Image 1 (tube, rainbow, N blue to C red):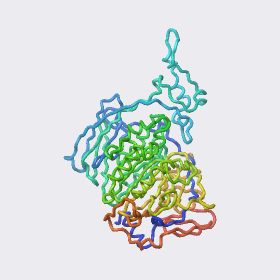
Image 2: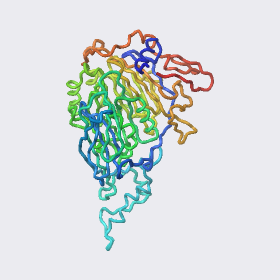
Image 3: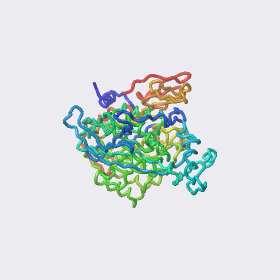
Image 4: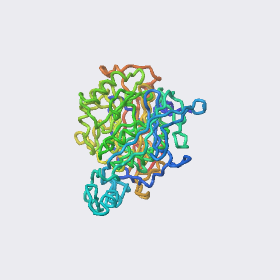
Length: 585
């Protein structure tokens, strides 16, 4: 049976398949009329149950893996400080008991003063984490902060009412009240070394009877990345994690905004519990978003729980890093750190691209950051323009191929871009901020001279979903946007996360669910982009150019027509739009 890449290439050879984006070839853009439900329900703390599978609970939990240096996988897990739990992991090759080793790591804890955000008790979507009554009770110290005989009290004394909580809104916690200081669980970090690409390993952590497994990413083609951003802790988050797992990716790239704890730090614990089914089996590589630094977060919880390979890539800051993952050199940047040419991040990026990136080893250069440089949504317009002005020319000079972002809670794909214009040697930008965060950003900017959208915006849709990027060979990558949730009047809170039965009223694409956008991304050759720092490599045989001749560009469908993006045809539909079944590859 043909694998997905071979099947897609075979269909394309017959002139059947999705449209192709050649670098520099204009393709008619499209704004989908699909609009997802405006909010997703944040899961309450009561939804998350602790792990009980060990001899003497409380058991270890919040297990997740991420790549370290070459041949390394980093395992992080949490345990209650009251337990005698060690930073210890037992691992070995599946099916080879004699290969098992037990290795030790480090343990750390941290404390942080709460930030009381109105999102805690009055969220923009879904159910509150705490009620105003609960917040008032935590902030009130009258039961212990006064002298029992004289009644005198000092600065620690506070009698906070519900009305006061509502009137004051966002507030930094009172450092004199011990209940307003969050104390983390023990966070154990263990590095597994000497791992072989393509080999499946099983592992278990101390004080946990569960056994997990992962496949160490290989460095050959084809290689699949799962892509997401702005995931939060909602029912849709869970659907996104399930969609990513179904892709069987070598790694997941998450472009910032993980837990949306917003200063109420126990939400970092519940997020790690929710993510366990995916994060124990696939390395999730992240960059920080605004919700990792805002609300007085200051990156502390993020850095303590999600160690990225910064030191291994020469970075002095754990919030930006690089690593070869499969046949791609992945660079992860911090939107909220210095970016000008004299900054530490810029100087590191310049040195990384000059000394660690080699197209003979990794033909693809993939960059990840939180806030998008190119975005035609009305939300966060030009918010990262200073960063683009500082760093885009450097990335362009080294031939960056794909840039991943989040922040905007809608999906958008651009043409290859440089300096605010389509450029055949520029990067394709994928904005992926619809991983589960409730607020929908559904309003779009018009294009030039009254056009419905900018000519460089090739597809945009306010849809919950996840991205799948398959690097097929050294010149061709195949990208899909998997939409998995929609508005449903009959569903609780009007959200339907069942992809197989999800229908959106007024949707203008045949793909009401599953793949709503798919395309080839073609890496230009060094000859096409003279002056860029790239090397020609010998990879797998690339598809014959003639395979794509009839597939460049898509028609503009009429009012009573639906666009089939699989065949590139307009289908006449009279009356009310209906769902049509389509086979996907």
